[in-house]
Length: 535
Image (cartoon, rainbow, N blue to C red; front, side):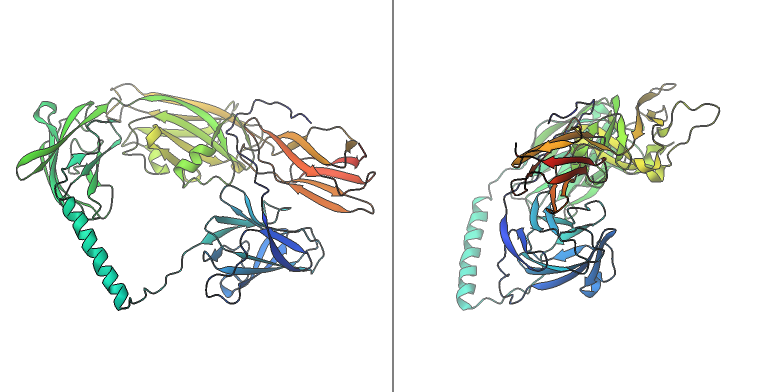
């Protein structure tokens, strides 16, 4: 069935793989499928986890640290075997599924619906495991899986092992002798950054532990020198220069990217007269034994405010993970209730000062972000307070995202998001300001199935399709329920595509012709009635 085309835009994500191996499931429920069934080395019995399966959420029962918790985090050790025993508490259809970070099934059991029935699922923990859920109720029965290595004592080597260790150490020492002649060098002889951002310069120290570095010259009225110390013993130090504060004041704005490395003995020989460094080329030199042994050039370009756009991200997108969140954002002006409403601002020269949401409204930096109702008549528009805004910076691509949970917005009410930089900022001329904005509106969280009742489906594999208002990248649950004497429940988990379309495959090969069937996008669509036919 063809999907309806809308004006939605998004990054496409692939549906979960169906390739799986078999596991054992005891009691009611029969079989579970997953990866890995061999107990961990030295482990005689799998560790037991007990849960209650209830539509509002999984309830922890054992071990003691999860007892009574709703959707508790399951902390596992990679390579160790586990036995999850859960009871169907409310008589609704449930199963137990473990997925990786991409939404792909690793463990999946059969669906059981008898109240009081129990199911046992055994599996071996892997580092890919990220979450567990009920396939029928994925929005409420959903918890995290944390797979962590367990600290183990270091074994004492026997005499033969000590001899081997000594031989390896001698070999490593020989290799280090071979590197004694390594010359210091900057990773790049030209580094470009915008004023107001943090510039990074990586120096390979060769065979040295520390060196003297200078940035600037008399020609640019700025010169700072300092000693870099390789405390991490990796042979290099990455220097970070905060160009916003480096030009004046007490803070030299120089630090080491690695907390084990060190910047010390900073001397500011020339400090610019402007509050912040100007756009210009700044020579960079590394010296040893009184001579220059490595050179680079830091070019600071003028900063820019280029534009803005409205977007949406799935409700499970993590605003604390910059790269992952940026990939999850789709440009779109319609936001389904519960998804992230996102303002994307394309601007450089902000990321030495834009650290948290509170900085989005700063008299010191000249920043002002407003997200408020639009087209309001005879009253003041309602705005979003800063504590409800999540800031996600992507300095590498000169952009940031301001995200708000759209649950707090009124449905069908237009909103306007505006970011302004005033002349309080040293990079904006007196009496001027830079401003960008984007608008969006919230809509109900719905889905449709592209079919007219009654739907006639063949006994083989069938592809259903439709559209939804929820964010691209969201995983839906599509169900087909058999009625009458041939009861069944079939589930598919399609991912919403770039244009808001979805498609799901269901197999009716084992269903007798004439069996009534009801289709639904769980929690989002109306039910569609149909029948399995011979054709």
